[in-house]
Image (cartoon, rainbow, N blue to C red; front, side):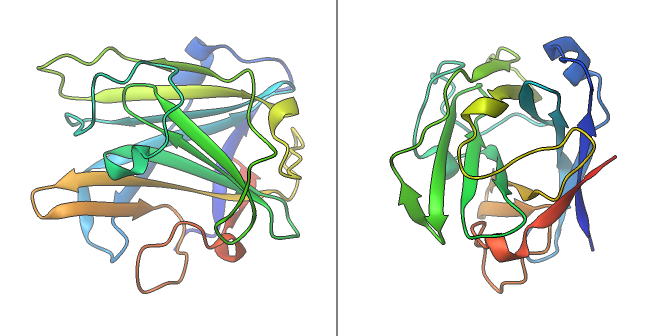
Length: 204
Protein backbone atom coordinates (compact mmCIF):
# COMPACT_ATOMS: atom_id res chain seq x y z
CA UNK A 1 0.00 0.00 0.00
CA UNK A 2 1.33 3.45 -0.92
CA UNK A 3 1.46 5.79 2.07
CA UNK A 4 2.75 8.90 0.31
CA UNK A 5 2.89 10.48 -3.13
CA UNK A 6 6.51 10.98 -4.27
CA UNK A 7 7.65 14.20 -5.85
CA UNK A 8 10.97 15.66 -6.91
CA UNK A 9 12.04 19.13 -5.82
CA UNK A 10 14.52 21.61 -7.19
CA UNK A 11 15.74 24.88 -5.72
CA UNK A 12 16.21 26.24 -9.24
CA UNK A 13 13.76 26.32 -12.18
CA UNK A 14 13.56 23.08 -14.14
CA UNK A 15 13.37 22.58 -17.90
CA UNK A 16 11.27 20.12 -19.89
CA UNK A 17 14.38 18.11 -20.71
CA UNK A 18 15.35 17.93 -17.03
CA UNK A 19 11.88 16.75 -16.06
CA UNK A 20 11.97 14.06 -18.74
CA UNK A 21 15.09 12.65 -17.10
CA UNK A 22 13.55 12.35 -13.62
CA UNK A 23 12.77 8.88 -12.23
CA UNK A 24 9.18 7.78 -12.79
CA UNK A 25 6.75 6.03 -10.49
CA UNK A 26 4.58 3.19 -11.78
CA UNK A 27 0.87 2.53 -11.33
CA UNK A 28 0.79 -1.18 -12.08
CA UNK A 29 -2.68 -2.14 -10.82
CA UNK A 30 -6.21 -1.04 -11.60
CA UNK A 31 -8.73 -0.02 -8.96
CA UNK A 32 -9.71 -3.56 -7.95
CA UNK A 33 -6.14 -4.86 -7.77
CA UNK A 34 -5.63 -6.53 -11.14
CA UNK A 35 -2.22 -6.06 -12.77
CA UNK A 36 -1.85 -3.56 -15.61
CA UNK A 37 0.82 -4.21 -18.21
CA UNK A 38 2.46 -2.04 -19.25
CA UNK A 39 1.99 0.26 -16.24
CA UNK A 40 1.23 3.97 -16.30
CA UNK A 41 4.34 5.92 -15.31
CA UNK A 42 4.42 9.41 -13.82
CA UNK A 43 6.62 12.08 -12.27
CA UNK A 44 5.60 15.06 -10.17
CA UNK A 45 8.18 17.82 -9.67
CA UNK A 46 8.16 21.18 -7.94
CA UNK A 47 10.56 24.06 -8.46
CA UNK A 48 10.36 27.67 -7.21
CA UNK A 49 8.06 28.72 -10.06
CA UNK A 50 6.15 25.67 -11.29
CA UNK A 51 4.63 22.30 -10.62
CA UNK A 52 5.43 19.73 -13.30
CA UNK A 53 3.41 16.63 -14.17
CA UNK A 54 4.66 14.04 -16.64
CA UNK A 55 3.00 10.77 -17.65
CA UNK A 56 3.90 8.00 -20.08
CA UNK A 57 2.97 4.46 -21.04
CA UNK A 58 4.64 1.95 -23.35
CA UNK A 59 1.47 1.15 -25.29
CA UNK A 60 -0.50 2.74 -28.11
CA UNK A 61 -3.02 5.11 -26.50
CA UNK A 62 -6.74 4.86 -27.17
CA UNK A 63 -7.72 8.52 -27.42
CA UNK A 64 -8.73 11.23 -29.86
CA UNK A 65 -5.43 11.89 -31.56
CA UNK A 66 -6.79 14.98 -33.29
CA UNK A 67 -6.70 16.92 -29.99
CA UNK A 68 -3.94 19.48 -30.19
CA UNK A 69 -1.15 19.61 -27.65
CA UNK A 70 -2.01 22.41 -25.22
CA UNK A 71 -5.74 22.43 -26.06
CA UNK A 72 -8.05 22.84 -23.05
CA UNK A 73 -10.65 20.07 -23.40
CA UNK A 74 -13.21 18.83 -20.89
CA UNK A 75 -14.17 15.16 -20.93
CA UNK A 76 -10.69 13.74 -21.47
CA UNK A 77 -11.52 11.11 -18.83
CA UNK A 78 -13.76 9.34 -21.34
CA UNK A 79 -10.60 8.01 -23.04
CA UNK A 80 -7.07 7.18 -21.96
CA UNK A 81 -5.43 9.80 -19.77
CA UNK A 82 -3.44 10.53 -16.62
CA UNK A 83 -4.65 12.78 -13.81
CA UNK A 84 -3.12 14.49 -10.83
CA UNK A 85 -5.23 15.65 -7.88
CA UNK A 86 -3.88 18.09 -5.30
CA UNK A 87 -5.21 19.55 -2.07
CA UNK A 88 -4.00 21.36 1.02
CA UNK A 89 -3.24 19.54 4.25
CA UNK A 90 -6.52 20.77 5.72
CA UNK A 91 -9.86 21.84 4.29
CA UNK A 92 -12.01 20.45 1.53
CA UNK A 93 -10.69 22.32 -1.52
CA UNK A 94 -8.83 20.38 -4.19
CA UNK A 95 -7.59 20.68 -7.76
CA UNK A 96 -7.96 18.17 -10.60
CA UNK A 97 -5.70 18.25 -13.66
CA UNK A 98 -6.25 15.91 -16.63
CA UNK A 99 -3.60 15.12 -19.25
CA UNK A 100 -4.26 13.38 -22.57
CA UNK A 101 -1.55 11.41 -24.41
CA UNK A 102 -1.77 14.13 -27.10
CA UNK A 103 -0.88 16.88 -24.60
CA UNK A 104 -4.42 18.25 -24.43
CA UNK A 105 -5.37 19.05 -20.85
CA UNK A 106 -8.17 20.17 -18.55
CA UNK A 107 -8.40 21.31 -14.95
CA UNK A 108 -10.96 22.31 -12.36
CA UNK A 109 -10.91 23.47 -8.76
CA UNK A 110 -13.49 22.16 -6.29
CA UNK A 111 -14.91 23.66 -3.08
CA UNK A 112 -15.67 20.16 -1.80
CA UNK A 113 -16.56 16.73 -3.11
CA UNK A 114 -17.37 17.31 -6.83
CA UNK A 115 -18.46 20.92 -6.07
CA UNK A 116 -16.92 22.93 -8.89
CA UNK A 117 -15.45 26.38 -8.29
CA UNK A 118 -15.98 28.21 -11.58
CA UNK A 119 -14.28 31.37 -10.28
CA UNK A 120 -10.77 29.94 -10.55
CA UNK A 121 -8.77 28.65 -13.49
CA UNK A 122 -5.17 27.71 -14.16
CA UNK A 123 -3.29 30.22 -16.28
CA UNK A 124 0.01 30.10 -18.09
CA UNK A 125 0.06 26.29 -18.35
CA UNK A 126 2.55 24.87 -20.87
CA UNK A 127 2.03 21.41 -22.37
CA UNK A 128 4.22 19.10 -24.40
CA UNK A 129 3.81 15.63 -25.89
CA UNK A 130 5.56 13.21 -28.18
CA UNK A 131 3.83 13.31 -31.58
CA UNK A 132 1.44 10.39 -32.07
CA UNK A 133 1.33 8.55 -35.38
CA UNK A 134 -0.73 5.62 -36.63
CA UNK A 135 2.05 3.22 -35.60
CA UNK A 136 2.92 4.80 -32.22
CA UNK A 137 3.49 2.13 -29.57
CA UNK A 138 4.00 4.47 -26.62
CA UNK A 139 3.09 7.94 -25.44
CA UNK A 140 4.54 10.64 -23.22
CA UNK A 141 3.07 14.01 -22.28
CA UNK A 142 3.57 16.63 -19.62
CA UNK A 143 2.47 19.93 -18.12
CA UNK A 144 4.23 22.88 -16.53
CA UNK A 145 1.80 24.66 -14.19
CA UNK A 146 2.80 28.02 -12.66
CA UNK A 147 2.59 27.76 -8.88
CA UNK A 148 1.10 31.25 -8.75
CA UNK A 149 -1.92 30.06 -10.73
CA UNK A 150 -2.80 27.20 -8.39
CA UNK A 151 -5.48 28.98 -6.44
CA UNK A 152 -7.18 26.18 -4.54
CA UNK A 153 -5.49 26.99 -1.27
CA UNK A 154 -2.56 24.69 -2.02
CA UNK A 155 0.96 25.75 -1.14
CA UNK A 156 4.09 23.78 -1.97
CA UNK A 157 7.31 24.05 -0.04
CA UNK A 158 10.33 23.08 -2.08
CA UNK A 159 11.40 21.02 0.92
CA UNK A 160 8.10 19.14 1.13
CA UNK A 161 5.29 20.73 3.06
CA UNK A 162 2.09 18.93 3.90
CA UNK A 163 0.16 19.21 0.67
CA UNK A 164 -1.65 16.03 -0.36
CA UNK A 165 -2.55 14.45 -3.68
CA UNK A 166 -2.99 11.42 -5.85
CA UNK A 167 -2.20 10.35 -9.40
CA UNK A 168 -4.76 8.33 -11.32
CA UNK A 169 -5.59 7.37 -14.86
CA UNK A 170 -7.86 5.59 -17.28
CA UNK A 171 -6.83 2.88 -19.75
CA UNK A 172 -9.29 1.53 -22.30
CA UNK A 173 -9.27 -2.25 -22.77
CA UNK A 174 -11.36 -4.65 -24.82
CA UNK A 175 -13.54 -5.25 -21.75
CA UNK A 176 -14.01 -1.53 -21.08
CA UNK A 177 -12.26 1.23 -19.12
CA UNK A 178 -9.77 0.34 -16.41
CA UNK A 179 -9.37 2.88 -13.59
CA UNK A 180 -5.91 3.29 -12.15
CA UNK A 181 -4.94 4.95 -8.87
CA UNK A 182 -1.59 5.29 -7.13
CA UNK A 183 -3.12 5.70 -3.68
CA UNK A 184 -5.69 3.42 -2.11
CA UNK A 185 -8.72 5.70 -1.88
CA UNK A 186 -10.62 3.09 0.14
CA UNK A 187 -13.78 2.83 -1.93
CA UNK A 188 -15.44 -0.21 -3.48
CA UNK A 189 -16.01 1.52 -6.81
CA UNK A 190 -13.71 3.88 -8.74
CA UNK A 191 -13.94 7.46 -7.47
CA UNK A 192 -10.92 9.73 -7.85
CA UNK A 193 -12.48 12.63 -5.92
CA UNK A 194 -12.08 11.25 -2.40
CA UNK A 195 -9.77 14.03 -1.23
CA UNK A 196 -9.95 12.91 2.37
CA UNK A 197 -7.92 9.85 1.37
CA UNK A 198 -5.28 11.61 -0.72
CA UNK A 199 -1.63 10.91 0.13
CA UNK A 200 0.85 13.35 1.65
CA UNK A 201 3.38 14.61 -0.88
CA UNK A 202 6.83 13.44 0.20
CA UNK A 203 10.07 14.33 -1.52
CA UNK A 204 11.67 11.30 -3.16
